Length: 116
Image 1: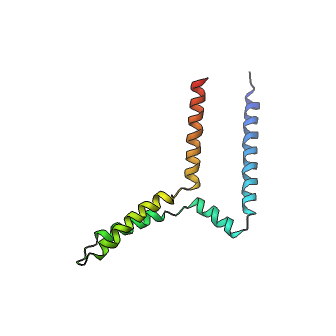
Image 2: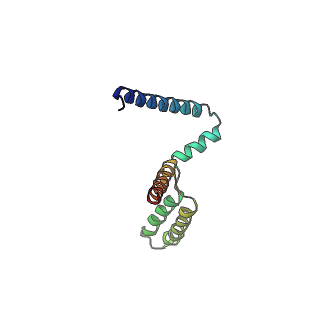
Image 3: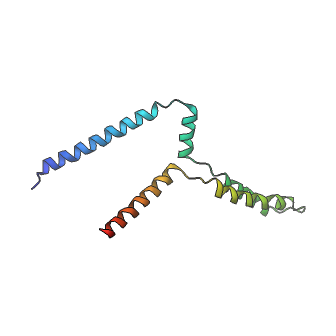
């Protein structure tokens, strides 16, 4: 039978190791002084979505009432360009990548459990 104190001590050691690794990672990230690298990491945190913005502007221009219909002529291509840009340049962030990775790992684990 496992001693509860040893079990608790093992848990505390694991927490301590995890905190040390996390602190080392954060300290290494702060050593990155290159502005282009910092901007690249920033983009991964908050990815722009130019396609969605272009689509919204296109819809607004399409629905603005105007007698000459110039905004409708400009709005429709903006909507199509926004849809194309949405497919070409997605707004995926590092958070989304983490979710996809977690889903893939759980799928692999489910497959492994069903096979064995």
